[in-house]
Image 1 (cartoon, rainbow, N blue to C red):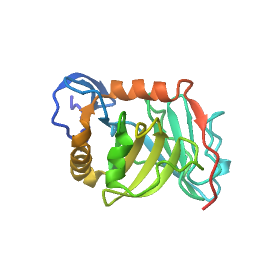
Image 2: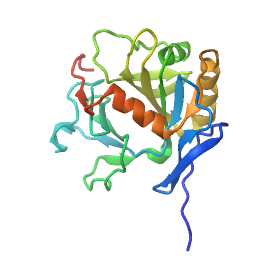
Image 3: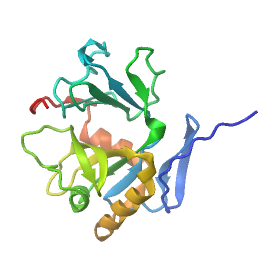
Image 4: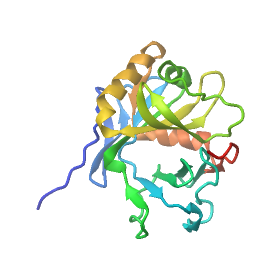
Length: 226
């Protein structure tokens, strides 16, 4: 019997302490030396759906998981993050649990294998991000989580600011084309070296997400239509 194996293009040098196989991905749950933060976690195994339609409001999501009305707005509930990119496009991130089958309606595309996904969070995480990006993570007119689109380390990215924290604490999610994986990880770890940034496992991300959003239920509605 042939065993299907899916591999993340993100490769960390740290020694894995604990792992699991999930949907044919080998997922690092913890590394031997993760430090005290900030942390960089590979989430490329999580399922991400792109949704495109001229009328996104016609898609009947479960209560609390509807596509937000305004571009840049996000909705998070039960580990499912829905981000509104523009008038006709949204992205659905299954952050914590396995995703259901891809809906049969036209408009959905599974982009998990075409992109990478990283989480950068903890003490000085936003200080690291600001070395690589000119986007405004601290815009007081936006409520977390919110979506930003633009260059990060000169690469077109989608970034979701998840937590501002105090000072430069906080965290964000980042996704970009799979081909940039090695360069992106090199740039982030290089920028974070002065702050003690180290790779961490999925358990560290799960703990952080539960701390940042204890009820796993929030949505951002501020902003202006694009």
